[in-house]
Image (cartoon, rainbow, N blue to C red; front, side, top):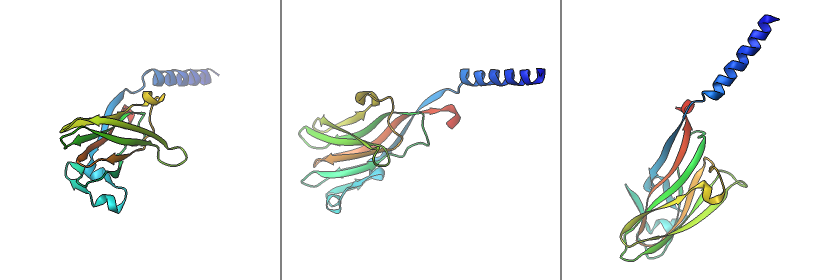
Length: 168
């Protein structure tokens, strides 16, 4: 009977130590250039888009829809922010609209649209954070759909996430 008591006590102590000494979490970022992660949503859009090493730019005379996917880590603890960086290469301020598509499969996909004013010849981020939508985290699948006006380029798409030390 004493051996069983010792084994149970040891198991409880080890379980408590595991909980109390959980590995620390680390902040991390997954980002890629839009030229590798984005494409026009229709062949007609692609004729207006120029894919360069550091951006995908709308060189046409009308807006083009672009879809992007962000490489995501395997099972992060949380996804803390999503971002698209855009550059306005025109001489006038322009509104750029993108939708963060949070999720991998229907019916659980949630759409979070945003529009930002980008000054003339300037660079701006479009940032989504879970708290804006009364969430504590986003899903690990991150996709974007952007309506890219003429003269605007998408530069980088990315995520900030928290990873446990055990995942490293």
